[in-house]
Picture 1: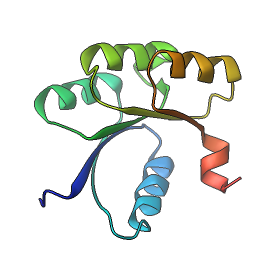
Picture 2 (picture 1 turned 90 degrees about the vertical axis):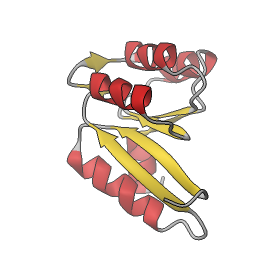
Picture 3 (picture 1 turned 90 degrees about the horizontal axis):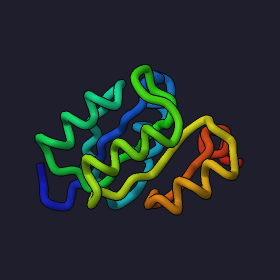
Picture 4 (picture 1 turned 120 degrees about the vertical axis):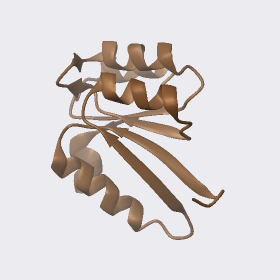
Length: 116
């Protein structure tokens, strides 16, 4: 893998969303991405303990964790890795709290999948 490759850990259990994210990133000109997908938070945390990632794309509703607790567990394990939350939870207070706790961004699924 080349040194200019941006290594992404995608923690997302919905195969359609995984496909959409991979497809959107293929369309970014001038950047190369390496994407590793974990369907569960614990699987993602294991990956973070073994490898270095530039960024984590995180869903807040997973089979083994839900809500802001998902983000909090991730930040405890990897406090220096930037996290972008990409979720279906459309709640302004959750978004504000996630940002206060250190999320780089909070993207609501309906907005990023439809381009609205």
